Image (cartoon, rainbow, N blue to C red):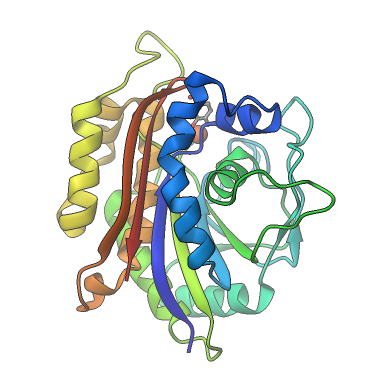
Length: 287
Ligand code: DHB
Ligand code: FE
């Protein structure tokens, strides 16, 4: 059977991708950000999974106001890198895992969650920046990402957004789905986006270190309690884009302890302000 071996959480700031792509990662400003990922890149080399189930949000790239799926699972064989206005990032295309993705869609929909099935979509910085952070620079032509990825897009851009409670329960359904796939795959689940940031309006630039660190503490030790927090608290305390953090609860809900197993081991924790307008948070939890 397939197993979820770890969950990884990270911010997805697009400027991080630009810093890598333009060769600026050695600059002092960016070095402080990337230094927090050195240990997890080494960890990842030792723990490269067979598949990553990557929870992220699309930023009006694949979807627009014409169509707004709350939860969308990618079942395609591959995904092109989106052009977000400056041309597509120079990174390899993303290879999918249609068999596992279809199995998860079947299981999770029958488990009462309404997913949108997406057979064709481009992926933006929400998905590619976490891959770059954890795997390092990759030549778009000569290299490939080390494993297939199942993109799972959550709407946190256009209201109404899903609750943390719903996301946490969905993570549990995703766990049941993955662990009922009859091939011995090592699967990681990633929760991405956040931490506190607001990109617009009078509060643009808002960062809340204390709240972010409390979020990390509770994500580790009290995820069920954290999942009860209403969306308005994210927006008030962590800024309008801080709501991206509900996606971390999907990954956390898929961990063994939530299903009665042992507590996860914290393999790595990092917090840094700022990268662009955002507080960067990063966690690696092993099952
Ligand atoms: C920034 C952060 C985001 O999450 C995003 O989607 C776009 C920009 C930023 O901090 O610049
Ligand atoms: Fe974002």
